[in-house]
Image (cartoon, rainbow, N blue to C red; front, side):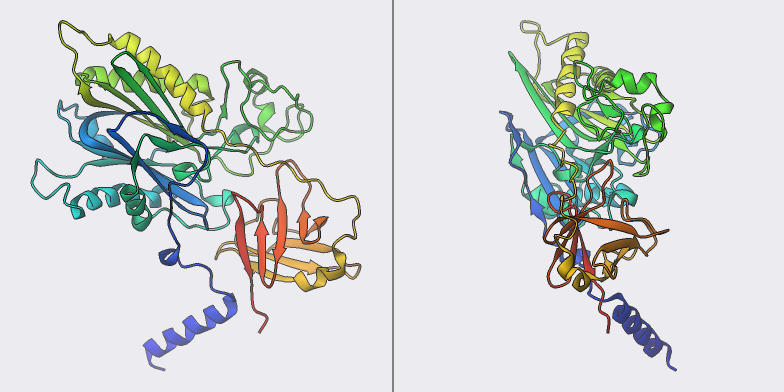
Length: 460
């Protein structure tokens, strides 16, 4: 048989057995500047654009400077993923930075940074002259693996849509942009939903803005020492303090202890951040700002910069305010301390409202009359398939049959689905897990902002 013809037949065979075609990433509609909870601030030089693929869900965030800025970088985490970071370490006293890009999708999301640079060229803002090249820097968070049931990532198309939608002084907070599927607290099994945060402060002529995408292995900690968000183990106190978790570690990171936990949702994390000032700083001062603010974040995120975090902070000066002898600027120590407080505000603002853990309905038979019609294999991605079976008594069971588990729906044995409503079921446990059947062939896991969609495979 001719080789190209064999390839065509093989492709048809795979497609036939896969059932409904899952969304091709190239056809996904970009969602730009989503989010009702936003920080609004007066700084026209800073333009923000966010892009998301709801099908992931995943996304990225572009912070663009209307005029070129000065920049430095500080890397603390054990697993960073960055673009153009080494160039910033050279310490040139020149304003060359055009944009900072934060992205989900792990290393695949780094494509977004170079995409913003090429968009600056394509739009005629930069060109090919050696002193007019577009400079974008960027860093990524890990939002793949067991956290999501697919491997959609923020790509060039999404990055350029976000860049071209950038607007001054508006930053979406919570689970949007690069923070679309961020989480925190896996070290203790908290697995809380997270996102991106921002804060702004102006004192006289000085302006400071902080931005952070918080995807930390540790927990976000309030100024009062409380854990900002956590799906607590059953034996934990309602007023959970970070010191309680740290004092009981490693027991607090193991199942079955007084502060028992499970880290099944992964140990691949990162917090990427940006601190911006309008005060012109020398390269050494800008580097010290980056180092100080990044160090200070260990108060807001505990523990911070672990082996499994890829923490990166960029420090930027727009240079719009150039102090003079008659009107001197802020000394570095004072500027750094205030900037660190602004960054803590940004980290706290990243925490979205947490979805509640759903409880089963009192009547177990509420949805069993049509249960058998929902049986089948639901494909979420090439990695994850969930098989739904109906028992003779009308109950439903679920089991993962692909290469990965689907949250608490594992591959080793089926789990019983407890009815919640006419077409909704849950698997009781520490974390939210709701399954909603939608006719004719959709299964939605955790319907709402973080939902994942599977399509029933054809039985033909």
